[in-house]
Amino acid sequence: MSIKGFTLAHHGLRRERTYADADIWVAPGDLDAFTNALRAYGWRERFEYDVARILVDHSRTLIHQKWPCDIDVHWYFPGAFEAPEVCFESIWATRQTCVIAGQPAWMPDYSGSALIGALHCLRYPRSSRHRAELEEISTSLSGDAAPHQRQAFSRLLRETRSVEVVGAFAQSLGIELPEYEHDANQMSLWNRYVGSHESGSTAAWLYAIREAPWSERPRLIKAALFPGRAEVVKFLGGDTSLSARVKFYVQRFARAIRAVVVRS
Image (cartoon, rainbow, N blue to C red):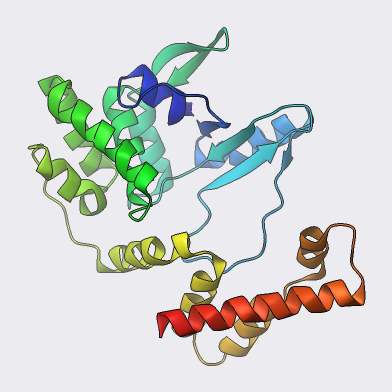
């Protein structure tokens, strides 16, 4: 199911623009089969540097040497606290057909696209670009949306358990919020994720080390300061000489020290 960029513009939730990637949402149980099918056509998963994760990765990025764009394959969305399978089925139930690059495709309807767009933007509270995109969604929901579309948006908040993350935004537009149960653990993870992931990998490592049991901290500190060989080789490219590796570690230590000083 096609999501985000094209679909938001299609529904009038964002201005049309040139896109650098294609975003796809698949059922969690189909993630491996879908990515393996693309591998058969020359797509491969982008190398990701090892980093502590506050939330489980919500997507895989696939690249192809002959294609100028990436494919981001999503299997859940941060901020939706319901089980990934339930969230997908709730959005899948809203699906509509569209034509992308001359080919038929599925996409969420207006309300599903609006929720996905809002969840995405709310992950980046310090980003002026994402704040502007959220404002475009706000303008559409408050001015263009029909009553049944606003009601459907509210229903999806309940079905995906997104009320705690998107609720304040929805309420500011006069959208009635469904009843929900506060999930302190999920909200704590969300707040820590939002507060750190824009700051880069160092913030995530610091959080993981701080929250881990004392017995786990030495392993995490070692992993943070001394990444695996594959990561070092990928970062350095062709020059893996001793001097290049020393420079890599010195720079890594310096970034860690700066991050600790800034956060203390």
